[in-house]
Length: 167
Ligand SMILES: [Zn+2]
Ligand SMILES: [Zn+2]
Image 1: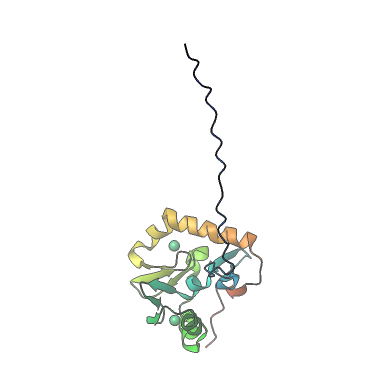
Image 2: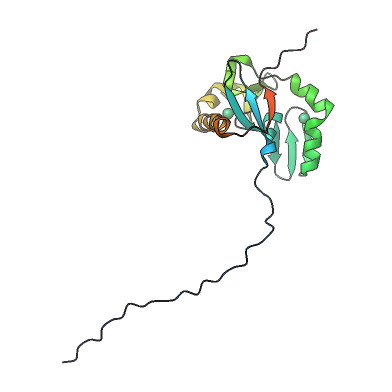
């Protein structure tokens, strides 16, 4: 009778291929500057992305400003320039966050549509209440609150409900 040879546990010396770590990764992480702290009445804070605050959507190959109804090429500089433009600022001021919706940061676009800053989406007015109850909206809102807690403020401050200009 032959004794079966002891099975040796195979020890594989894995030669780890050390991939050269790329020294310059393309920067895909949004810079902290791309967030805005919004202080609500009562002092509660939310942090939303600058694009969300400004109503900039990414639609395929284009950026679209929902307030100015302007489309731009997918170019960061172009987008930033739009956000700081007088025209956009004025239009944004004319679409303040509706106070009734408080921290949900809803701006009215037209009688038929509203804009949810929290989710960065346009919602038909008919479904606005439903939208506010959706899981995704609630989650986004929680995220915005959490971000405010952990946020190191070199962010720009923005007022959620700036006083309306006196006529
Ligand atoms: Zn605009
Ligand atoms: Zn929402």
